[in-house]
Length: 548
Image: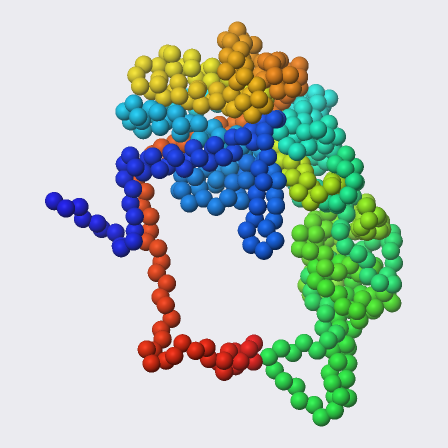
């Protein structure tokens, strides 16, 4: 009997082995793409954007690479989304989670070739994940009761996070900068209070932490450049109606004097608006939109500092740190919450003038000023620092730490292997494959550094068999060392999230046995009569322009 298709014309279906193979190939390709960036000696990727100008991004951040590439394979999209979630949840471990999921699927492909059913593999993996999670929890160390040791843990975590980024050569400088910024938050974990500004020029070591808030804008003409005990009104309102703006209609006048009357009415309207703003008893006005010459002149006459075009992110953050609210109407001054600040002044960074707010209502607010030679270096430095800040903020909430350098992966792999040796049946084979995938992470880290990974991983495995559970890879010397002495520490939260996300994503892809692709949407050609010649109708085009 001939096969019957139940799908619309153009739809496609991949079944059983074909679907599974397609999923494995896509996911493993994504893992192979980013695995060369893993570890302290990982390589960078250049992402060249399409379109006019072609933006250039140089990075080794897994989430940034995967966001930038367009993937068509559904399993590859699952890994890309998983990497984004890892970045949003904990800020780091985006490459590790992708590589681990890809290695799990690589092992699953071999098991399926040996006629082991996917559900058997999944059952073994679930038990392995649970055992690995328990081992990770038991190995975690909590120093939150000892402030000095916890501070040292935070510095070590920051150094470890930055060691695989562009900032690795200046990791001590940036680790202190990141820890100081996060400790100012007093445990709130609100990273919105930390503002990062990038300024070309100088070197990376010229970057510093400023206690206060910096706004990359300029103060209006003939207005005070320094203001003490500022009362700030933060607004999002149009201040540009000192010109006639009547779109889509005509105004017929019989003399230029009538035009002057319209302009005067517009000016009076703007003057009333400025008067309503000044009734709030402020001495600083910050607007998200433009402030034209006439209202700027009125503010200058009133001795009010006016700052225009503070972009939305800047206005939101200003409202947060000064304790004010963004306002759009000004009829009820008693309902408006003003922002407060002890001092506003202009400061120079490189060749640029910025506005500095010190003594803001939100005392934990601070600004990190990044300096660098090129825009690409600044962008990558911002991404690296953001990862470190996210991990530190998570560690302040969940203070447990574990040792890095492949130590935790080998620890989990040992526990899973021990469990597999006690488990009868085919599930034991799946557990062995899970342990092998975990051991691939230190292998890839050593390969990326140019060392003999087989020898190093064998030494590390032997050390863990001797219950040297704090041993990992020392990539500075290419040896196996004690991570506790070397201070290579990672956040427990990051490693746990990596383990759970990778196993869940790999399990989901492994369950797939059918891929159904929808038929592409058909685009109908515009109807044209046979008698009508294909000549453009310029009259219609001209009319269209007039309507606009």
